[in-house]
Every structure is written in structure tokens, then in C-alpha cells.
Image (cartoon, rainbow, N blue to C red):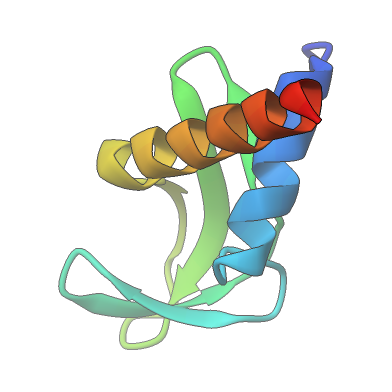
Length: 85
């Protein structure tokens, strides 16, 4: 099990507020999924565990890079504004 940095933990918390959270339902990659985990940090980025509604198959879904970039940018802007105050 990998040790999460405080930045990863903060990013996971922000992803949860965007809807990538346990027991939510999302539409991604043209399918609907029921989420069975909160965001997970791994060696390749961030992912979530989910079950496809149509087939019932459990999958690990990568959170899109564009979402991660937007969230990282927002967190950096918030950190800068906190440091300036």
C-alpha cells in the first residue's frame, strides 16, 4: 500500500466533492457506473472502483486527466491565495 502525500489526500477530497465518491452514480466512457470506492491514488494517477450498471462487471476507472489538471490548478490557486493573505 502506497503512502499518500497531503497533496494526494487533498486532491482525493476535492474529487469527492466533484462526484467521484462512494455510492454515487456517474456516466463515464459512454457507460453508467455505480461507484464502490472513493478516489484512490496509485502509481499511474487517480482511479475509482465501480460496477457497470448494464453488465454488472466491476472495474477500476481512471479519473480523466483533464479533471485532475483542473483540480490541481484550482488547489494551487487556493494555496497561493491562502499564502498571500
